Length: 431
Image 1: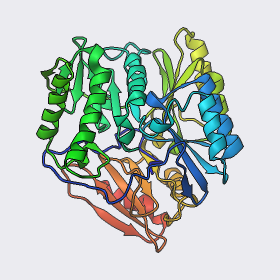
Image 2 (image 1 turned 90 degrees about the vertical axis):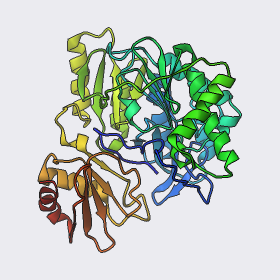
Image 3 (image 1 turned 135 degrees about the vertical axis):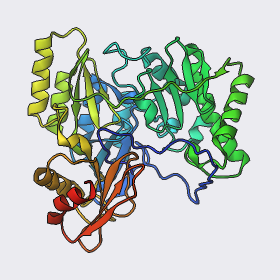
């Protein structure tokens, strides 16, 4: 399960590979949802999909209420801008579903796990990008929930709607739509340009093409990269489907350039804060919802964007000060932006250590790391990111293994017997 990520880098794998590498699954997709809860050591876990990370004030308050009434009180942000509730008491599934349905967070029970959509969080707020992707988000979510075929997508399949700035386009989604400077939209897979009005439908057709390809090959797969097909073969299938459905398209290279998520602080039209290790306490959530106006936006980088369009600079600065006082990261130089972790102990039975507490101790002892760090409680390394980083993996004997992952350089690995030796090991491995 995905429970931690790095604030400054994408976490998802690339959606496909030039060489076909089949990755058929020998079991069904067990990805948790709002209705299919996961049993963890700290109680049941629910993952609520929040398309585009957009939460109205009413829905945000409903989630906070559910966390306090049914769970451990905290809200855990995922690398897809979704929300996890942990520590849920036995037998609360029906009550949770009623709360979510009443708030409009379950528009379709049959599709609730497949509404995985990330979107540029500053779209329409700061004047960046080529277009506001909110109309695309609304249309794609509605189309997903209306598609009988889409019910068969796995809970891991991901859509990305990028407003042209390149932020979520780099997250390795299975289907990406990116606004182009000429008013159209680039679609991948397929690497084609379509009319902006056709973009949401084209994205859904690409996902349905994936499902059809999986069925035709008799394989059970979760992600686009799992198909036993090359990029070129998948692209041809998508283009053929667009043609059959009457959607005009031209082959078009993906726009160049990419950016990261919004840095903490005041940005034009919004406030941006980072949530250390993605965990928001009940008081922090109440502060966020109290500062937010009609909505807030959860980001794929474990952050929150609060729109402030129309607010004075002084008022926006005052809001940011309140969020910082609540323990949220408002400084773009904070070392927390470079640290991620899985849930570790005591929430996961497979974990060998309380990696979140160990990550916090190391941050105090060693300061801002030279490379982003990702802490894992066991060799599964749930939520491990791509890009330059150092894997810090807990060992059964109480120690840790550190491995650097830097393109163009040979991996460097060192094992340490206890936590106190990690700062020195990090200095050696990243020098």
